[in-house]
Figure 1 (cartoon, rainbow, N blue to C red):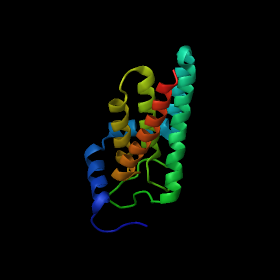
Figure 2: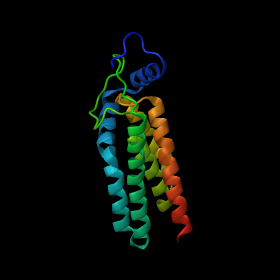
Figure 3: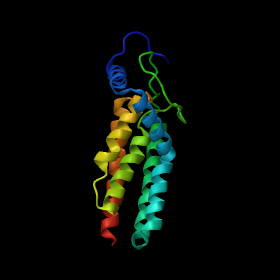
Length: 172
């Protein structure tokens, strides 16, 4: 349902964020990130690549890759329960297509955060600050999620990624 009038609440925050962050370059980058993160396929592919390259820890990379897909699946399950529609207000420009009309939580934020947490443990580098904020911002730039959608997605991905990472540490 299209909201009318001046934006309020999260729509106002999203509209302001999109206005502040949106540029030709940021939209191009956000669209690329969107395609990479769709259905967690890019993150899964990187995990499989890690398994190919790091033969010593192949099993851990494959478990981490499966964890990224599991986090994505968890976000889809929550979406189907919550059923929050995507932003639909004249002040918000939708700049990319989406596979569903459901918004909460952001599956891109979920799988990206899970990948960052899991792959940080395998690379020995904290990937979270480099990967998570740009993906969360990209969802706002593209106008396809409310701020709480991306925050909840990041929290869900962090939870799933953290639980699996803890299991990987216990099983050397």
